[in-house]
Length: 183
Image 1 (cartoon, helix red, strand yellow):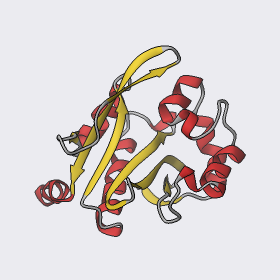
Image 2 (tube, one colour):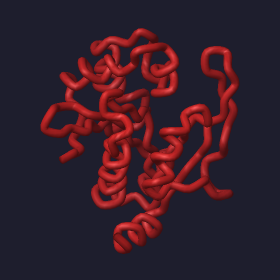
Image 3 (cartoon, helix red, strand yellow):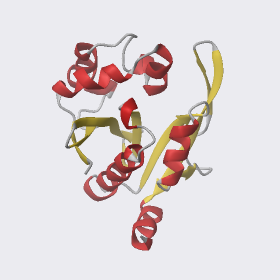
């Protein structure tokens, strides 16, 4: 059974091994997190020493997904534009040996529960690269939809010289509650 808990520095030793190539690292968060190849000290320094790059002290929540076998996934939560009603998911990564087995969906479901019930968010957003269809479909399957006109805007980016697009997705608390009430 998967559970979500706050990130601990010892988690970094496992998480950084999942970035087996530069493209995976860049899709994960790349330059916002550090430099490739990233080591556990660099990740922990960014998270603990630099508060994830967030200016506000209470605006960075790194989380780790674990099961009986140990660390399975990771993501961060932060408030978007300093608004505690809008939580942004980011830096989502899953142990490659667990992909395609429902772990990603379960981790996102747990993070949504945390965002809506613990952080009391009214909306959650996430950006996903258009060249990462597995992640895109994972997020859609957990209730995310394309961001509306008042949400974050899609934007162009470049990964290793290849143009790509960041697609913005969101889900409101009402949409999430309707999904869980229907299941």
